[in-house]
Length: 400
Image 1: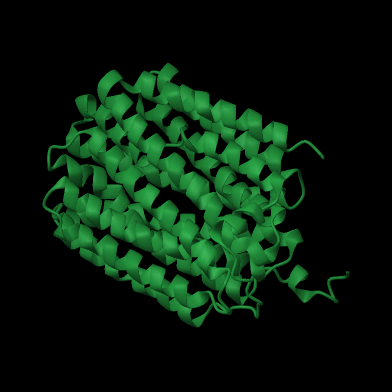
Image 2: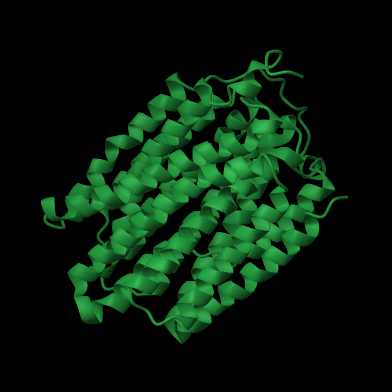
């Protein structure tokens, strides 16, 4: 079919792709402000790395199950978009609620509420995105969304970095300011994104919906789950930088440098998301994904083997940003390719749940291993799973 016969093929950057991308930018801007200062906020309460791992793990785990339920449910709806709008509202409110916290468990509750909304909206947003383009442009569409999302993740930490001294390190004020970009994201989904006409799938059981997913997709999920069990939240890298640099730079300057390194991480994440999407539309997606998994192993080994300085931390954050761009773009575009459009909600929900279970296990286990045995054991655990996941993806990406 020519581009004239199918204008969507030549105009993949359409109204829906642009609206979803901008919504991702503003939403990420909102919650990345909170994410960036969360380790320092928790430090004022005198809590250990295990608490950070627990907060990240529980939140990601709850989010993942919300994604599964949302994906299953919304495949059966004529209109998915209202569910996405509700999810964006909940995320914005939960993020701002950080400012009401006076103990670590309050942060856990607010983060969990925010991530519940994030879980509900995610498979819907991805299904809307996949439905607005052709299979030949999945990589670019998802790469663009990841790039915009990560631009928000650049602006968010930068905003936190610039505003912290302005508000005299008064964290509740900073958390309240997240209510500016958060509602803007909701408005973009509600008024800019156009939902395509679709026929809902029949009302089958949850188990039947799972069995309807292709065998090759299920093999892909096993590899994703294995990698995800070691893929800790990168707030751990912020904590690592802060702890290792404090003896030489002092607490305040070390926190500033750690924030700056996270901005670098997210700049590379944004840049390489679009590059990864372009490559995904031209080369074997499984092999590209495996390369991202092996880069993750290189990052973890760098933490273990390199002497920790500002420069080696910059290298670690750099590799971290690049591998996340490849991982997230390729996992989404490969998921959309392996499963029929009518089951995209369930497929994206299942993928997110597998990732979320891995996030829960990895953040919690890495936090506990770090607290109990040090960084070498914690990041060595991750490196082993990263390599195993990469090898399994390579095996499953061979032509059938």
